[in-house]
Length: 171
Length: 252
Image (tube, rainbow over all chains, first blue to last red; front, side, top):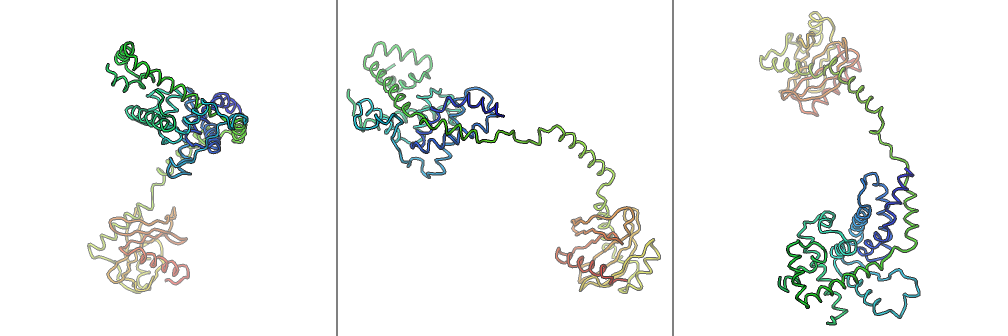
């Protein structure tokens, strides 16, 4: 069984960043995201026998996603009233006063994202950051294809609107 | 394709999910429409910016160690699964064969006794021939029965309050001659069948057959089958009182 664990670490540990990122986006707080990632990895390890190969990254991300939603259900009745902490993990020297314009816009984008409903955040990350196809999204999120497309449209529109609030259009 | 439509499909196009025909149309339009081209570039730039901003969220350095530690604490022993043990199947086959054999050799005896007892009881009611020997006195009923059977049935004259002995009869159940004691309580008629254990003791059971409640039990002396239309509580009271009398020797 040690062997299984070794194989698991080899296959699944490399996706820790992606796992954390998804958890962070869904839960909005670093501490909570860390807890959920740990829980998800333990769950994944226990269920590793049932993993029949294929995309290990997608597999662990789904487990993270489900663990996150369970966590949200448990801790917050309304999934959208979750406090958001902005701190991004960078070397402490950069964290302070002088933020470059780029960094500012980047931070504003993350803040705008945090204001979106959790379903929008979820689908935007899986589609644009993880590159999942519409079919994959439909299957993983248990949604009809049409809903995937309309949800993406609305999510993108919403995000643009939220950003426009802080970054009025230049052109 | 018009500019309006391009605006509608631009994101799907950038997702790589636009069908071939529309893709061609869109690209043809882009070739000649600078405003749509600039929209495309704007959207592309935003996406790249979005991805970069989100990728700023990285797993904190201690998370990997925490996860590894948590995983190492998961017990590595393979869960013991009974279904993985090959011997379980051989054992199951043996157990099932034995059960089947027993079922064939010893079919539910007490059910058959119950069934036939009910038939005798209901037949006695329908013919109104309750007893062969009618007397409330055990002193008279017992010798009469003993003379016609190969055993001496224990006779309880008043098994429970309110019940009186009507008499006795001889019945045949499963090819065995048995003593039937008939009791009456108000409108209820109770038939109590008994015979010595012979080959086996009757198992304890309670069931409903044809609207009658049938109880079976046995002790060292006799197998008993009780047939009546008594309510559950009346039935149990009767049985308890009867057994107490037998145990305490209050019978003839």
